[in-house]
Amino acid sequence: MPHLPHDVPLLVDGDLTLRAPRVDDIPRMTQACRDPGARAWLRLPAPYEESDAADFIAATERGRLEGARIEWAIEVAGRWVGNIGLHDRRGDTFEVGYMVHPDARATGVCRRALQLLASYAFDELGLSGLTWRAARGNFASRRVAWACGFAVDGTWDVPHPVSDGASVDGVWVGHLRAGEPRRPRHPWYDPPVVDGGRFLLRPWHGDDVPRQGPDEQSERFMMGNQPGPASFTTWLLERRERMAEGDAVCWCIVDPDLDEPLGHIAVQHLRAVMTLGSGRVSYWLYPSARGLGILQEALDLVIAHAFAPSTDDSGASGLGLHRLQAGTDIENRPSARALRRAGFRQVANERAVLARPGDAPSGALTFELLQGDDRLAQNIEPAVVPTLRTARLVLRPWTLQDRPGEDVELDRAALRYMPAGAQPTYSTWDEWYHRRARQTDEGQVMWCIADARTDQALGAVTLFDRAGPVRDRAEIGYWLYPHARGRGYAGEAIDAALAHGFAPPTQDGLGLIRIDADTDAENVDSQKLLRDRGFREWGHAHADYTRTDGSISNSIYFELLAADYEPTRS
Image (tube, rainbow, N blue to C red):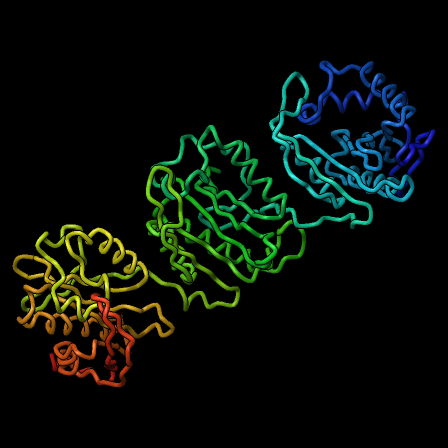
């Protein structure tokens, strides 16, 4: 078991000296203990007098003689700047404690003193470990321990008494073992200010308290991750803790003229061992900032910073990541649109994964972006569904008023020749409509085929899969309700869709170079529609088509190139 020395040893590192406390330290020690910055985190007498400093020195002397503690004064250039000490907690493990005068803060003095003390504790006293603790929120103390290689093991959820009868909720605890490197174990991220022109990304400040709580949209999709006035202090503390852990970088999106917060954006999960080099993007905006393109610009800035090389532990130059991930509630269409516009690719669609208290679980979409991806080539704008008119029809966007009647059910042809979920019924309408709305966000152009006289919905025609590897091609799909078949409506609608698909963007078309189609091998009526419009049959696939009724069939594939398209066929 280590024994403390009879006298306080002199420890020297250049102009920094650790020595026994002296009576002439009392005036500056008293100043330091009256400072609000110290009183916020340490339990000190009130008011603090020079006699209290003298009592502290005497108590440290008694503690040393009893083998319970040893205390040094930190001296720089002949002047007292702080105290640092060891307290016996468990035989060969001592706890470190330190404080510095206000004029010595942020100078590196405390870090140097702790490094010097750690060397003495391990090399001379033979201690097996040092422990550290601080009131939760005392980031100045935590940064010193972090810089010297201490690990933060967690938070004791107990009150920590401080000055003037107050207390802080929670105590951080950590350790450093003999033989471990005395340098930071991980980054401590300090979000740099990033100028976006219309707004700034900057660190959150303690006075950025929101004026009101989250609105209905935030409550639904953020599930507690957006603070209100009462929860802001705790919310901000948790974000600062995650940055101190090297696990996140969090920015406040700010109006530069008013310095008013507009929202939040962060890159998180940076310390996950199995996904090092990858980060998860999260964000939210206050209602007043939505719909202005601010999130899109913030994503651009954060993506650039995340993929820029990292040159230090603060993340000031960049994070050096190779991959970003993001996720949204499947019903949060604005969030998914923002990610697609930023060049993220959707890679997963999970069902019933997001818990909602008091409500059914919701689905989730997962997106990713790699450092080497061509964001311009990958970005997807929501499809614009133009209104097209023919002699008898109007091709227009679907509306909630287009719900089919209760008598509309899937007939034999629909069950046999269409994939499950392609045609809605009265009972499946809500899910079908919202799924089609999300597919419009993915770039699909889906028209409702409506009667030009009555505006009654007759069926659908769609140009889809426009987000595939070839951006200037699409696949066409179509169907009609039973009462609309046999009147030539399908061919009329297909003709309008083809003309729009092949028309150049200068004529408000899609500028496609190729349109594909595939049909059930037994659906001869659909095949005739395609052949009559110049589609060429190019392949067969066996047992690759699952019908709505569950049976398996073969498929026939068709193609029509822009170079072969003849509008006069229609």
